[in-house]
Length: 243
Image (cartoon, rainbow, N blue to C red; front, side):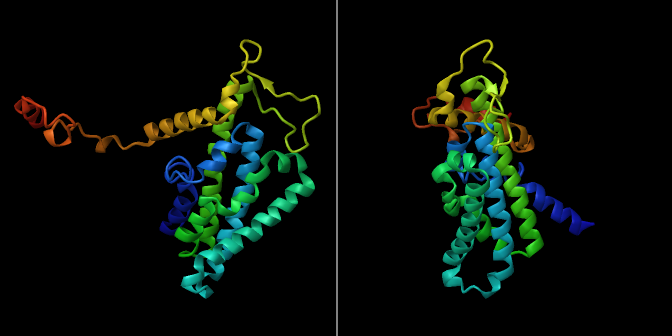
């Protein structure tokens, strides 16, 4: 039972508790660049998740045979192999998504999330646990991109779920109108400033919902005050701290 709980915790850690983007704050470059719409967000999230799971499994299986002084180059080689496979598959079967992701698809090779999990988890744990870690971290990354993509798409264009959706949507599909019937979209939300705004909003919301309120303390002491040197009535602060 304890072993099952441990594996469940490995799988779910990446969703919120150790979310790679919102908590560990890694992989922010592709997050900001590909979250302009839900379609590109899902595409990048799934591509990175596939690479993360496969590389975690292989690295976990062979890390005992890799000399420590060439560990990182070997990890990058494994990751690059899977990125190339994913890139070729997307180019062959989903060319619209391949074009939309552009340079950020091959740059998955140097995504901090992939290499970070290889170094911190897959290189130290078993194959099953590493696969679960890859799934959890990948889902956390994908969900974050989807939420940010939803915010930016609705505010930026006034619609939701627009796009060709990997060639499955009909040519007449323009997305679900949310705000477009009432107000024009704010184009800044599809640009870099909009990405930072959505990132800040989502990160603040997750921090607020997951913070441990039992550890929040009000410290009125002088040591933590920026005006300590110029303060003329330190006794008042001391009385508040004692209370």
